[in-house]
Every structure is written in structure tokens, then in C-alpha cells.
Image 1 (spheres, rainbow, N blue to C red):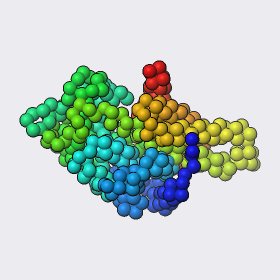
Image 2: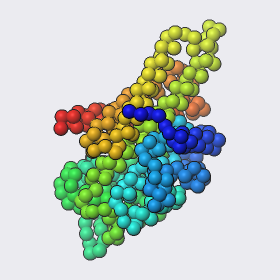
Image 3: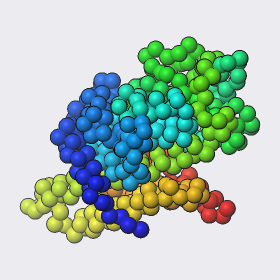
Image 4: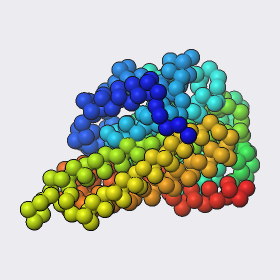
Length: 382
């Protein structure tokens, strides 16, 4: 497996990291996340107009650059290192992937909007009783003439408070947990002025991101709101979630690189008994263990990224193996970093606490280690 980046990929990495180092201030982003609108639209416009990363993995026909999984890994890792809260994975990876596979005039227009920074998507798929099993859907879509009527509830819809479009899973046929009969719908959205019949309950998550719970009561959508073939959305949704999980794994790698680097630097500065605590052998061993966990996480993330174009079963196994490994590493590195910083590790003033919260959230995002270990085992048996 070749882990080396080519010249263009190295340039992409250096360009994104340079932009974030100069323009993305952690203290400023936390202020906006906690007391502002939850994100920085000027940074998002910079991603689109100056960096072109919103279209980096989209086809050239919609204003993209035609990149693939490796480019998404490079971008996601850089965003993780800078602890960016803007909705790259939700919009570009999940929304972009679903819209590309849906095809048609409206998805093409939305993909152009994603590349230009004008469209932000949020996937409404998780339900109160579904857990991480996204084919467990009770939300229904029924035909009424030329329209669709949506009824049901979705929870923890990431990026919904500032999304321009929702992508909603609903059952048009079949039983509750069937993978057949699932359909995907798109609707224009404004959390401050939602469509008739749609209740929006927005909130800030533990890692300073924004999400919302949604309740659909006879929400009426036009016929062209249906994306792709009726009842055939599961394969595309399953692939989109695997792609998002791999991207989040790469983001976690970026977070862990920063956490480890900050911890090593702190132990060189912090003194006890007249010498830096980095000189204590027991702490050196602890940081070596953290470094080893990071390297395993890097390898696992690469495994997932490089198998995203494989057949579905192999792709799913690689992604689940990576997510389980990332979850373990995120917890080990995050907890040890906080411990080595002492009480300061969880303060608002120190970056390490914010990274720890994000790593804790990533551990559960798109399924915790237990879920993915069970999924991997089931795929292996099959």
C-alpha cells in the first residue's frame, strides 16, 4: 500500500495548512461557536474562492477539481489539525457524494452550489430509535398527487442550523429495517424560517458544533424533491456514510497530531524538581505509547481511504476496522494528553481541552468502536 503523496497532493496539503495557520484562529472560532452563529461564513467563502477545497473532490463538470479519496483525506486531516468547525464533511463528503450518485438536473445544480460555497447540506437520517443503524427508518414519504408528504422525526442532524438544504431519508415502501424501500429527498431549508409543518430544535454540541432535532408533520415536497430512484437510496447512503466515516477518521488523525505535539511541547516547558517533566522516563514512555497509537491510527485511516473505491463489503470492512482503531487511539491520546497537562488540560483557555472534546465526539460519530467491531465481525462471517 503506497502512503506517499504526489507533488499535487503535497501542494494541496501545504496550501490548506498554510491558509488555516494564517487565517483560522482557534480562540476566535470558539467564540463564534459558543456565542455567535456557530460558524464563520467568511472562512467558508475562503475555502471555496481561495482554496477551492469545496470542489476538490467533485467532478470538473460541476466546477470541481476531480479529486478522490486521498484529496479528501488530506483536507480532512488539515481541518482536524486546526479544529475547524465548518461543515466540510457534512456538505462535501456526505452531500456531495449523495448528489453525485443521484444524478439529474437539480443535484447537478446543487453540486455547483457546493463547489462555489453557496450550498450547505445536512443529512437527516438518524432517528430517535435507530441508533447507528441508518436503515432503521420509520419516517415515511407518501405520494399525494404530484407531491410527497413527509412525516416522522430525525435527531442530531449535524450542521442543520446553518444548512441551505436538507437531505432526508424516508421510507416509501417496505418494513422498518428493510434496506429496500428507502428513498432520499432534498428540500430547501432555513432553520430560522422552516417550511410549514417542520419543527426545528437547534443546539450546540459538546464539541462546539451545531446540530438540530427535526419533526416532520405533513411536510409537503414537490415531485422533484426525490433524489434518484424511489426506494433505492440505501446503497448510495451506505457508501456516503462509509466515505464520511473515513473522512472523520482522517480528521481525528489531524486532531491527534496536534494534541501529541502540544503535549510534548508542554512537557518540555513544565518543570518539577528543577527540571522539565519531559526528562522523567515514565512520562517519556507515556508519550511513546501515545505516538504508537497515533501511527496505528494513521495506518488505519489510510486503509479506509484507499479502500473507498473497493467493492462494498471490502470497503465496509476497511472503514469499520479504521473507525474502531481511531476510536481507541482518540480516547488513549486524548485522555493521556489531558492528564499530562494536569488540571489545565480541561480549561477553556488551553487548546488541548477543545481538541479532547472533539476527539470524544469523533469516537461516537458514525458509530463507536463496539458498533464497528460488531459490523466488521458480521462482514467477516458473511
